[in-house]
Length: 83
Image (tube, rainbow, N blue to C red):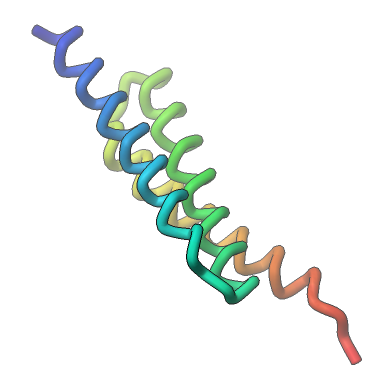
């Protein structure tokens, strides 16, 4: 039973990541793309860390998404030319 729950949790985490990434397809703003991309990568990394640490997978994905979104926004702001 535990293996089934683990497999379902991993599948759900991956589905959320894929759907989040596909939502960025029609976005024109570079800031939004960088922020959303950071959130998707962060969610994936957070879920992976949670799986390896035997923790709460959705919690890890949520924390990773928030941290990743912040990192993506910071990257976007740092990469803009300053006049």
